[in-house]
Image 1 (cartoon, rainbow, N blue to C red):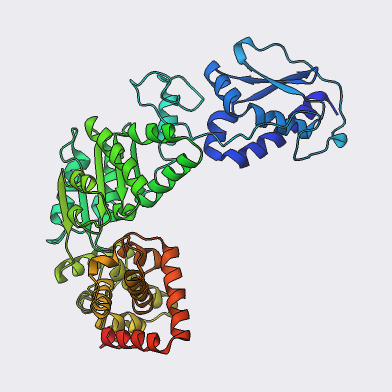
Image 2: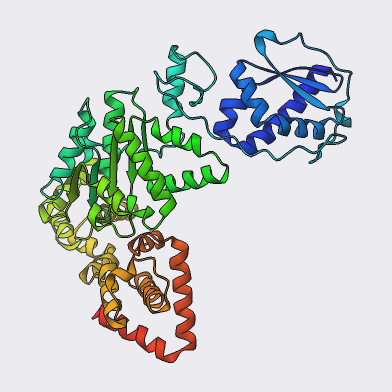
Length: 498
């Protein structure tokens, strides 16, 4: 086997392991451009295209590459990273039969390398920003080339959540309950200068907040593809912040979020009670507003009603335009159903659409789900859509909507029963006199509503779904061991269901 093939095979295996360790984004930006020049005297020469990349690789990856190569080939004692323009001619090593190579986890005959953390994902530096504080654009071209611009446009989606192509302004049905929020979102999307900062959209579950957020992002990118838009949930923002703390990369985190043109955070109530995340979000928010960058926020409550949120942050969130989305009216629900039926190219009698608009009043998501069910049933079974078939297919959903128990109602009834305040259901207090009723309310919310665990957790002060799981398990254990407690739960259930 030739020397080049042997080195290539070793390098291919090493790069595969590095990719698994650091992730696709960091690998593509910092490690994929590397190539091997040769080996001489136990030292492998690795070629990089720029001096900056050489310094970055030496700082963040050199020890790990050396350790992995020593595991592939015990003769390797060190590595040398050189810039392409100054790299020496390839030096051919002595032939090594590939069958003699043994893959091991630890380096052989070399000092153990110090632990190397995964490198942060490189932050995008907008045109006009200079200095070493900003990471360069991904390898591939200079700042001025079209390739560099394309790389920037592709790289901006690495942290941003994917946008749903169905959620556009054209597909959004406007009515009295949502006309202010829709008009404000359109104004922000089409404006060349920042008008409302921040734009704060709030409303109940399934009323169209996320649809408007996606539509706004789509419209901004359509109007100006060069603007950097990041859309993500507050949960993912918190995850990115925790990740930065864990790997001591808070500077890269700050650069990543403070170099955007438009920052959109969905369900901001999730960070209620998360003090460190709120602190970082507060500073990020201020930095963007000071730079006249657009911020768009959504939540299930108005800024003043966000419990567990710092007062200064609630004040900042209410700075700009606060637009609420009210529960849907019959006319709006009927309009949404007609638009959805047209999109599905389904022939649905008007009396069926009117029936659904009257019966399903909770939220748009459930309304569209009901329509999808009756259309799918008609296509699969081969029966025409009638009022009778609709009632048959949606019997469970219609029965649930006849008497819908809300989490707010559960919290109020449980608070009255245990003589505590409703606000204690959302607070961070852990005293048993408060924690036990809160667990009971979580248990009843799981049993009596169709809400998911994360949704229930958010209604209890932005708690994690694992907290709800623990509460359900704890209440079930107490019901089994304490007859008096079981009677209390049964009494509360009957009162709520009556």
